[in-house]
Image (cartoon, rainbow, N blue to C red; front, side, top):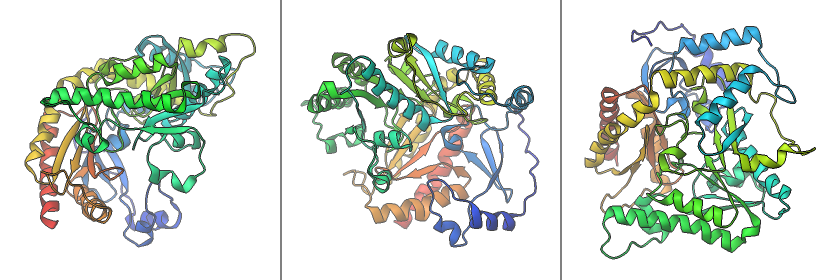
Length: 475
């Protein structure tokens, strides 16, 4: 990848801003920002771990677009693959037909997946992959003659997508209330935010050191899943949906032993375990699938984002032989699908992207450098506004607090002023695109391309230090 400054296409900034104001409806955004005349940042170029806006300003992409551009921006190789495939076969569905790229990609994903997860159902994104897993879990139990098993369990503040079914699994009340009534059957259990564990009701054993307390907390949190299964009735629960590292709320890694206990619980009560790896797969945690890092084998994996590093949209639900088995016989069909699922161009790009992962050893790079990334971010612990640095791989969250000693967080009005009133804009103006989020307690999230290293870690830490120091002085 080139290290020289790229040539930028010239745009009419005023014209673009006016057209955006008149016609563009942005996702998860307050349209009032554009309506007020403030305009919106318009990103026009990406190269490596940098992006440029329409005014020519350069930024570090500290979020890989949206946890997506894992192999980095500006990969001409991937663009060329897409163009060649579009010339040869731009589109054909996999509804009763197939094409070579979908077949090869399914084979490739199955080879990476743990255990007996050998069957791949393609979609066009992560929310669709979760929706597929939800529908499949319910149908699977019906085919087993157990139709009452239809409920699903997920964690507090967890994000699993916005389709109506996936939204029922999402554990963020503020994102759901305007769309209710939702698909019934979604139930919530505590997440694995060890920093806030006491507020959840967890009490460590007397004299336990931090490592022991964290392990105890992991078992406590896992046992809340068993508690919910028993409360609802094992014959009503179809599946548990968990991210290896929970995104929303600020990168909650699993405590040691957590997933092993969850797997035991799911096996004991005949409940499917779905590893939602829409963010965590393809190198974000240093493996093709993050469940390998944490030592568990799920019944299904949902994935998307980094599969193509964003060069073309695709998603997948990878299914165990056990779950697939009823569909091998007779007239049984899974009446579910997407027009663009397994798209020939997206599949070709995914295969080439995964080649890059292997050739450049991006997973190994993440595993080697993750401790250095963590150390750089933990230097921020000397700031009074930084309460906790957590995460894994190239996926970290920094929780912000009003009082470091008591862990007191900001109220809604303070969080609004801190995050939207200052931090988001100030970090961007300082040259860092990342996420300042308050779905839960206020956090800054970082998930840069997997190609960055120690020099960039230091650069990111320096930008954060300057902006957070100013934020604290304003408070």
